Length: 298
Image 1 (cartoon, rainbow, N blue to C red):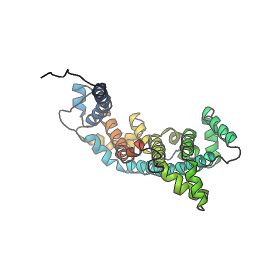
Image 2 (cartoon, rainbow, N blue to C red; image 1 turned 120 degrees about the horizontal axis):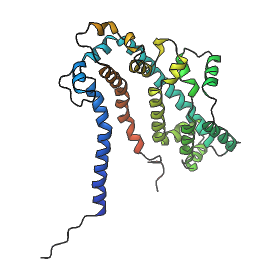
Image 3 (cartoon, rainbow, N blue to C red; image 1 turned 180 degrees about the vertical axis):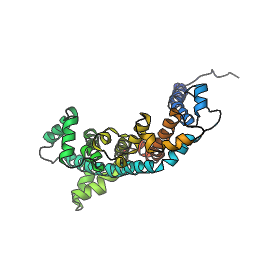
Image 4 (cartoon, rainbow, N blue to C red; image 1 turned 180 degrees about the horizontal axis):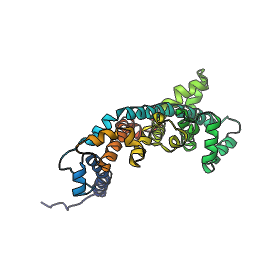
């Protein structure tokens, strides 16, 4: 009996190389996050003895989280401001982006090319920090949570991406709806939006993550500490300017084992990052879906 020669297909080699590279990339991403989690449980004595880069603590110290718990009023205020900014800001941005993108996607719109060019120019040139501050001040939005939402209500890039997404939908679907008596609003809500779930979910996540991570505009426009979002509270703790005082430095002075700076920073990072990590898996499925799945067959 003649034995077949051993042969490895190119597809199998690609799969092996792909698994190895993806595993290495996953480790590169997971190890820093795992280190931050473990650092939040390290005591000051252990950091002084072993250094700041600790993968596995000798004993778990919860004093950093204890300080956060006793400063929960400041955290609750910061979280409420962040959640307001994320939900209200994302909803308004998506509404404005969808309406603007749908209008520019209509071929019958007069002056569509001029409007698109005008919108595109705003991606290349901006007014700058001082004109933006003067605009917000003139609108009476200083020290208001709306100052973190209205100035950046539309992202030009996301709007153009969504416009191209809408333009990729066959005109035959829109024309069929119009023949059946649908107006522009009904075409948008009953035809275009159901076929654009992937685009809406992706851009919506970009808006939400942008609001969650933003801190610079709040630092400029907000003076009331009770209106600062979570990222500004995190910044204050990391820079050691006002965060620990607002969250109970008196308690830390009474602790037998004070949490070191690294543990405190890591604990706040974990508290800040975890919510957005839990949301992502529920939206991730839309990233891999095609825009025209189930719309046109045959």
